[in-house]
Image (cartoon, rainbow, N blue to C red; front, side, top):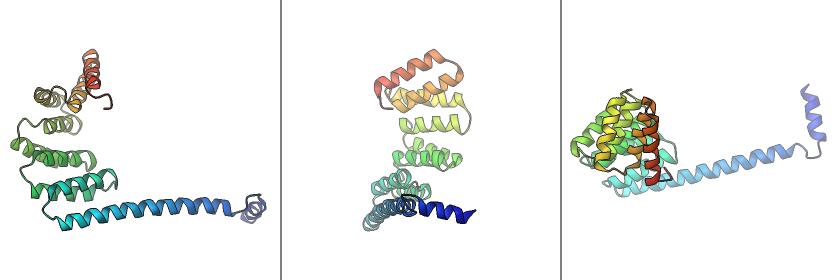
Length: 193
């Protein structure tokens, strides 16, 4: 019965307040973290208001919204603004496409954004790599992915995301020894990847 539980708690050597103190501390920490995030978000918003035509600021804030605030919707809005402010920048389009693909699960929109980035700069290896990942994971087309990864590596043979991606395609296809060698090559380029 609940009345017995209350008496047991009151008779405990620590008293009933220990549990409440822990909860209060956790709440205070959570409120403090949330307050810091809100303060940072307000700072970015003020900067965007003060510099309304700065696409680089919007991209930095979009990354912050995506990675720190875990707010993919807000990040998407900021990337859309950055694309409008600098429509001929393949880097912005490519990174925005990655958000659309991985965080928002909008593969057709990501494909369109990547095709526009590659129209602007056909040999843009980050876009080629992101398009390969999209083809492999969203469209289940490992052959297209392999070709796009190979094209990215033709532009930059040491580009680790493309090396890791093509190695993964090889691994899935059963080419384990070739995949292992490509993974080793990627690790020699960047041991932290």
